[in-house]
Amino acid sequence: MIDHVHSLSTQLDNKIMSKQIATAKKRLDQEKNIATSEYLNSSLALCTLDQNGKSTIPKYLKQIQMLKDRISKIGQDLVGLKLLSNEISSLDKLLSQENLSFSEQDLQRLMELLVHEVLVNETFIGINLFLSTFGKEMNAS
Image (cartoon, helix red, strand yellow):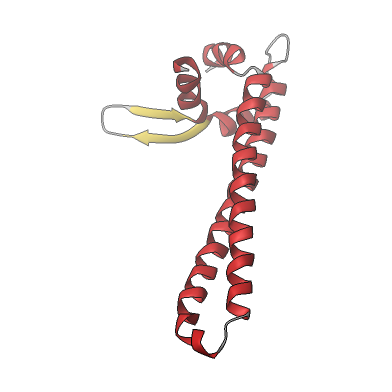
């Protein structure tokens, strides 16, 4: 585990992680703005329907609900990005300790941040890490 921590310290360059998170946040903010604008336009169109437009009410209601759901999902993704940013900061703080002599509490927190899932089979135990996929993607680009 400690060897993996040493190898991660170079991968977790805070600037790179911050840039990736900022890019994702910017994209989500744009998507949220577009969805919010579409939501407002659909709401306005629904509110200004005349008697001849009553047959289109279900279409507008369905579209409004879909847009509300999309805005909610984007909001959840933004919260997830904020959580990721906080966890990366915590991880960076742990990894920046000069002598890497972790307390038991620090090691437990580090494992919570690193381990995505543990797979137990009859012949082996597999540990999937959150940042291993990200590290591979960063190396590929």
